[in-house]
Length: 159
Image (cartoon, rainbow, N blue to C red; front, side, top):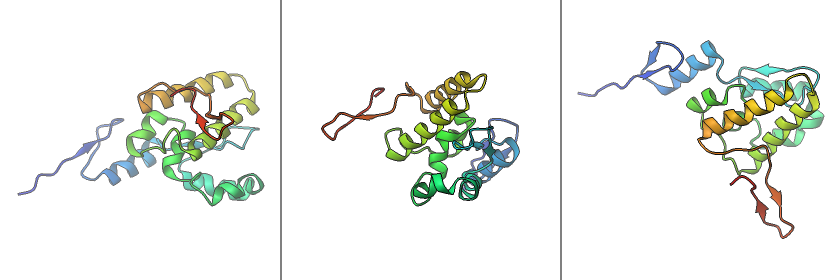
C-alpha cells in the first residue's frame, strides 16, 4: 500500500498530490512567479512567467537582449532574481546560484532598472528586492556585485 503525500499551498487552503500541480496553482492563482522587465524604464512591466518576459524582450528589446537569448538569462531558475515576490518564487522554483555569472548579470540588470526608473519609491523597491533575496536564500545579501580583483579572480563582497 502506497501512501500519498499531499502538499498544501502556503497561500490558501488548497492541497495537491504533485508538486507540479502546486506550482501551476501558485502561478495561476497567486501570481507568485511574476517577474519584472529590467529594460522597461518608463514604467514597471511585469509578466506572469519567464517565458512571457522572453517573448516581450524579443519583441521590444531585441537590440538589448540578443546576447541573453542564447544563454540562461530567461530560465525559470534565473527568474528568481527578477521576481516581484522572491520569497514565494523560491518555494516552487530553485533559483540560479548567487555567484553564477547569469545571476550576477540579472541582478545588475534589475538594479540598473531600479536606478534608471528613479521614480518615487525606487529605493524602497531596491531594498524590497534585496530583502526578498536575503529572506528567500536565508543569508546576507547586498546589492554589491562581485568584481574582478585584477588578477582574474572574482571577489564576492558579501560572501
